[in-house]
Length: 90
Image (tube, rainbow, N blue to C red; front, side):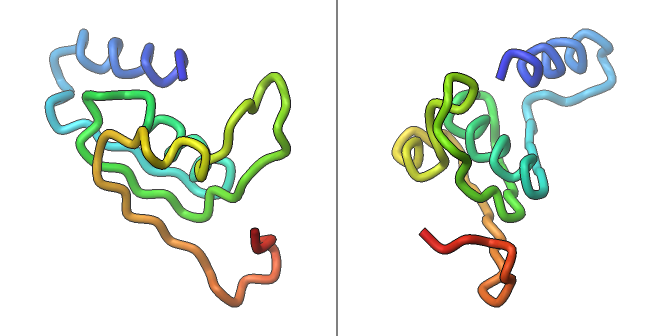
């Protein structure tokens, strides 16, 4: 999350980005990161996750989206393909 936080700080420092309307989106692994950032960043106004399937719990991935759902700080629009065989049902 620190890389995304640093990106927001940089965008704000340029004077060209309106970080008062901050949003995030991502596909696959990026969808996972979108969920995690939506729980992490209180300045986020919206998030759109495309898939974002759970990961194996490890030191680098201590939680999954379903673990942090109660901590999400903005509206999230989530897209999951019900007939997509590459998504493992939980």
